[in-house]
Length: 421
Image (cartoon, rainbow, N blue to C red):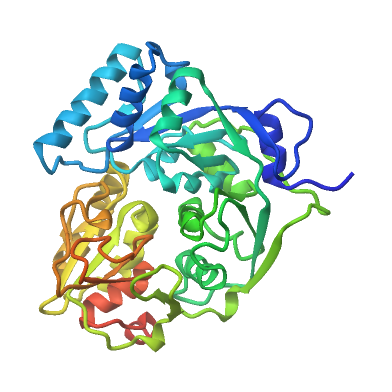
């Protein structure tokens, strides 16, 4: 029998089958159903309009209203109130609508994610949870309405792409640079409706926070899901948070992949994606000197404590360049408090940064940092499509925290190795 990939094994388990193969359509049982303040109201109304009155299992539903916190207008205040009332009626205890932050960072911090789970989230960056060996799949609001009511969904078993990172990362090169290098290789549609499986010895030293940056951006290549095999780092993270050890799935050595990609981690420079696509990636040295008006560090891709620590390492004792706005958005209130207690926020503020409350904020052009027509922004976000952060004539570059912080000091795109040499 031909070996099976992680994705194939996990879809077989979720659908109660002994085995599945690429192209099979399966009906799978969902372990955790999620939505946010944009997608949840749509799903709830669709569920009710179809005549469903009760959710399948209140303990398996989680709604995080962190996209617009604090509310940018009365409409979203009303929408979150609507969702909160629904959760009260349905006895859904996992409702977060009071500034707790972004679901993709908050849920693992609270210990709600374990290896082997099937997680469906009405948001494209659901694949973040694949860093834990969970099968995490994005859904539309209509599909989520069905899941809320019945706890099941249908999936097509996808082919898998294996991405191998080998070698030791150089100083100031991070997991963000690994995934940007992968985007350069695969493009924005190179993994459309496929599973990306990340492997290689370069992953072993990375923390779970750093690994989540990689799986978070698999969707930028069109991936249906992203996966990493759980290891001791995973177990330690789960144990500290009282999370279940779950069930670890691993690909067979003779598993069949549609494509295999090898990236030499030890040869990478800090990488930057040019406007207006996350796959327009080049080494930072090719863009040095491009003038910026705004730097944005944070949100669900690079807004965890390690990211703020990296920025503080660069900014400590220095000042942001005149004429540049530096915005820092912690991913969650847990990160915010940890950064405050450790003195990181003080370092950033003293350098001239504005600290946003946890949430989506400027990343999606919602509020707290929307760009005007002449703005050029360098962000640690996951997307830089035209108009993503505001005006269609603005320009957004993507990088990791080291490049962003170094550039904040100079006012132009800057190689951190030159600032910190």
